[in-house]
Amino acid sequence: MGIVVISLPVILFILIVALAFYLLGRARGRSQAARVPHYPAPPFHAALSSTSIPCRVSTPG
Image (cartoon, rainbow, N blue to C red; front, side):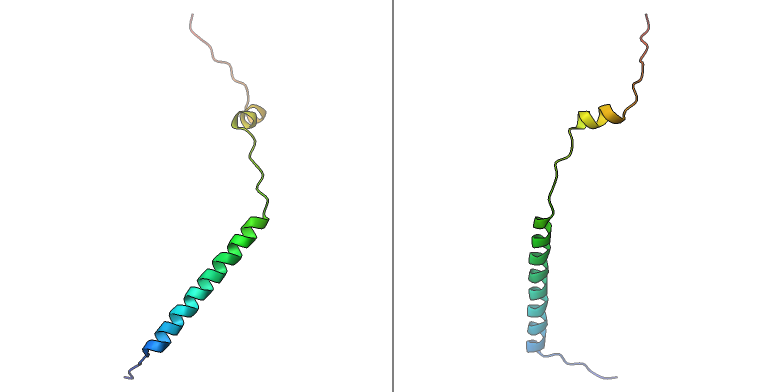
């Protein structure tokens, strides 16, 4: 069996590269999310009134 030896500078380099990719990806994702316009949703009661079917409730009496 072979023994794999990884030196400390290699481990630090991998950690630095991973952190750089994480930060660059996060910045790119935030810039893409800022370009998408967010339209407000219609009021809840307006959505219900246009799609709901009126029902009759009978009361005893």
